[in-house]
Amino acid sequence: MNLQKVAEKISDLLDKSIKAQIIPGAGLTLLDEDEISISFRGKMGRRLCHVNSTTLYDLASLTKVVGTTSRLLQLIDEGKLGYETEISEIFPQYPNLRMSIGQVMLHRAGFIADFSDKQHFSEQMIWRYLADFQYRENQPMLYSDVDFLLLGLVIEKLDALDLEESFQKHIFQRLNMQHTSFFPPDPSLCAPTEYSAERGQIQGIVHDRKAFLLGKPAGHAGLFSSVEDISKFLLNFLEAGIFSKQRLKELKDTNFDGRSYGWAVYTKAGQLYHTGFTGGLICIDLNRGRALGLLSNSIYPSRSDKRFIAVRRLICDLFFSERKF
Image 1 (cartoon, one colour):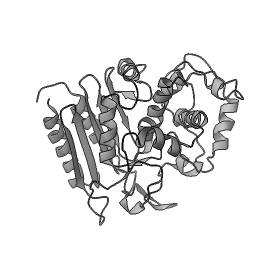
Image 2 (cartoon, helix red, strand yellow):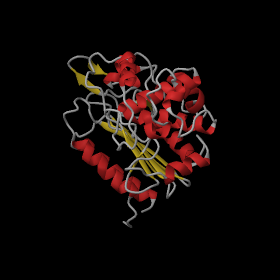
Image 3 (cartoon, rainbow, N blue to C red):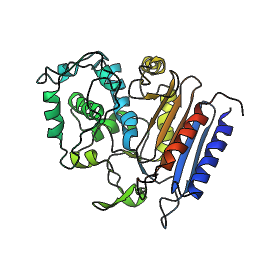
């Protein structure tokens, strides 16, 4: 199925989702080596303005791949890290952390999926958990925010910069991603993510509870971006313009329990994807050299409506499908 037909089918799904009030609106980009398609539809929310090229979305867990994973692969290119580097080598005060960078990127370090106490979350809570952690070899894959909270701390240590400064210097400025940041300058340009009794309408401030309480940029969530910036990221990703061709080959060839380094694998090696809790999706087919970026605020006004999860799965099916339509 050619890219244009894929774009038409996915656009139709999104239009139907907006009409059914599954999502308020969305921005979509599809691209390969020959063409780039960017489109916008719907609104940021009821009685709010239409989605357009200036609309910023909370990336949620897409932060893990757009920011954290990309910088880690650059650090490997720079010789400051290796997949086999143990966390204890970076933080020698924690000799118990014998898991490797590669294991953490593959979610195979053995960490819990998440912290149960999100009301009192802090960086100290992370370090207390790590100090008491008992490493065991050959852990199964368990998707965990803790992995990427730790990887964010690794980047901070090696770059001697916070993640906003590191990602801006090494990724976003390099790719001319002018609207991607942990700190969007104008909240009115940001699609609201959710309305909560505690925080009211969350708009222009990170939605993720842990990232909100951390008090600084986090490795697992918190970036805001536009569809056009995501398109630049994807184009450079396909062309090995972010990190080396060797790193790209490793991402393409790796599939441990449905994971590559930082990314999820859809059905087979080379089919990379990741989702964000707020409604985002990135798909990259390295076997056919094409990519998809979808930004939305599907949990607005409430996360209780989960219908978009099934729609997003259909979008993945369409994008990765090798059938002829």
